[in-house]
Image (cartoon, rainbow, N blue to C red; front, top):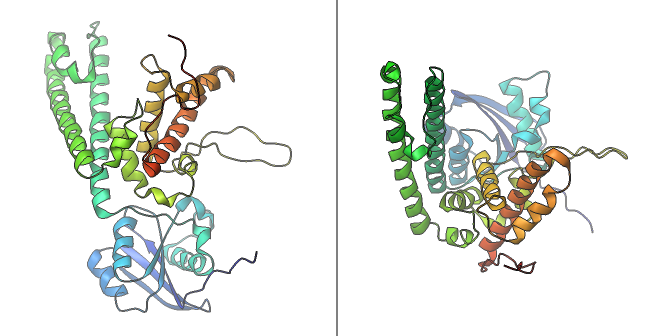
Amino acid sequence: MQVKPPTIPSLTIGLDVGNRFTEICEIDEHGEVIRRDRVSTTVDCLRKRLSGLTLARVVLEVGCDSPWMSRLLSELGHEVLVANSRSIALIHGSDRKDDRTDAERLARLGRLDPSLLRPIQHRSEEGQCHLEVLRARDQLVSVRTALINHVRGATKGLGGRLPTCSAEAFGTKASRSIPESLALALQPLLAEIQAMTRAIKAYDQAIERLSTGHYPATKLLRQVRGVGPLTALCFVLTISDPSRFRRSRQVGSYLGLTPRKHASGDRDPQMRITKAGDPLLRRLLVMSAQYMLGHHGIDTDLRRFGQRVSLVGGKAAKKRAVVAVARKTAVLLHRLWTTGAVYEPLRNSTPQAA
C-alpha cells in the first residue's frame, strides 16, 4: 500500500505565544520566510493581524493561551495545529532558543508533516468553563487539607491532640479541643476551614446539576462502583469526544497511565508511567481504583484483576495494581460511553460463593 505524502499548504504560519507578545513567522509553499511580525497576545490584535490573510495552516504550541487562540483561528477559517509540547524536542532541546526562531521552527514542522507535532484537540469553550468548576473545587480541597494539617501540627507541638474526624467535620469538632494559648492563632483558620467546607458542598451540588442537565453520559459511567459524579464528569469533560479514539485501549495511554518505553537490544527495563494528559482525571481514576481494591470494594472483574497483579512484584506490587486498575477503569468507562452498554461487574468471571 502506497502512503500518500502530506499536502504542503501555500502558506504556513508559526506562532510562538508569550504572555505579552506573540512572534509570527509566515512561510510559503517553498519553505521561504516571507514575513515576520510581533503582536500583543490579545484577541483583538490576533484577529486584526490574521483575519485578512489567505487561509493558512497555523501552528502553535499547547499552553495557557492555546485554547482560545485555536478557537479564534478556526473561526477565521485557518487550519489550526496545536503542537504537543512533549513532541518538540527540536525547540525545547535547542542550544539556540529564542522566540523568533521557535516560531519559524513551528512553521517548518507544520509545513512538512503535521503528524510530527502529535497535535492535540482542545475542548469547546463551554466544556472548558465546566471543567474549571472541577479544578476550582480541587484547589479548594487542597488548601483545606493544608490548613487542617497545619492546625493538627500546631496543636501537637504543644502536647495537645485533636479528635480523629472527617475533613467535613473538622472545623466544628476541632474548635472544642484547641488549647486556649493557640486560640488566637488557630480559631481564624478553623473559621476558614468551615467556610471552605460549605463552598466545597456547593461545588458538589453544582457538579450534580451539570451532570444531569448537560452531560447525561455520566450516568453510564457511574454504573461502575467507585466512580462517582466527580470522576464521571471529569472523564466526560476531559475526553470531550469519545470518537477521537479508534480503540478504547488508547485512553489509558492518553491519560498517562501506561509505562514509559525505553527498549534497546535485549534490554527492556520496567519503567514508571508517562503521566501525560490531565493530572486531575488521572488522580481521580487512581482514587477510584484504590476504592475498588479497598475494604469497601465489591467483587468485580476489576478487583480480581488488581488482586492478581498485587501478588507479583514485592513491595511495589500494590502500587502497580492500583495504577493497572485505574488504566482498565479508564478503558471500561470509554467503552461504556461509546456503546451505552449496561455494566456487568463480573462479565468475565463467575461470582464467588457467599
